[in-house]
Image (tube, rainbow, N blue to C red; front, side, top):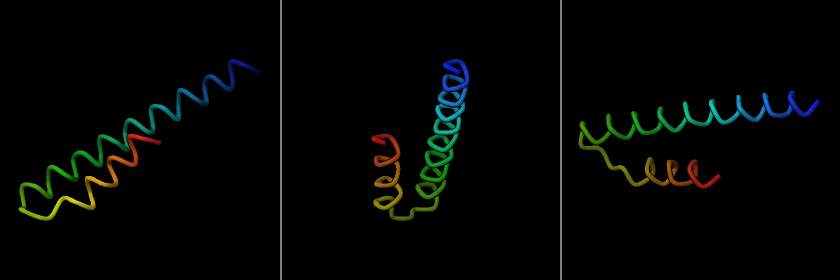
Length: 50
């Protein structure tokens, strides 16, 4: 039972890391295209804090 919960938590951590990386890639692309980054950075900050 505990191992199941641990496996689920580890999957959530891995999925979160992928989402953070994706947001960072999107921000880099927006920056290359000279777009405003305020909203994208705000989302990234929220993602990192939760």
